[in-house]
Image 1 (cartoon, rainbow, N blue to C red):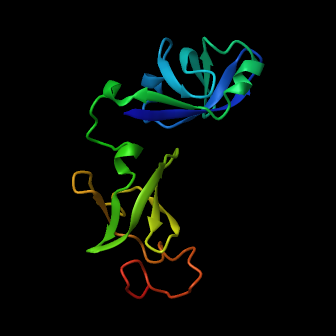
Image 2: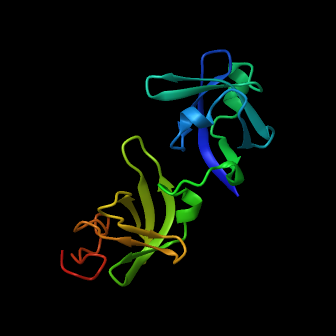
Length: 181
């Protein structure tokens, strides 16, 4: 299975360097010279890292195949993937493809389904589509997501009051478990 590890951003400078949105916990291990990534792009199928450096909090990558700013601009928005067989088993975390489609439960009630994982500098967010069709961003922290059961096909949530009502227009005042907020 393929695992997305980055998305290419805008070009940086005139020599083909690009900014990247990092989607991996270990960029210093993943983006090293010689590393080859599959690319989701119509004309370029793979890119080989030539160099990597940080500019403040932004990772800049140079690829052997991107020689100038114009070529770099053509891959803007492209996704970089690795084959998951290359990934070591890490019992401390989960990948997005493992979480998507898991049921989201509060107590014994199904309140939605995980549709995505948004990684951030400070914390990650699970994107949950509620049973009403709303998109809810759930902080992926142990206090709110105490259990992830991949084999059982669900995550348990202990959401703070109002988390599932933030964008609701019906004004019911009930939380996802049907209790008054």
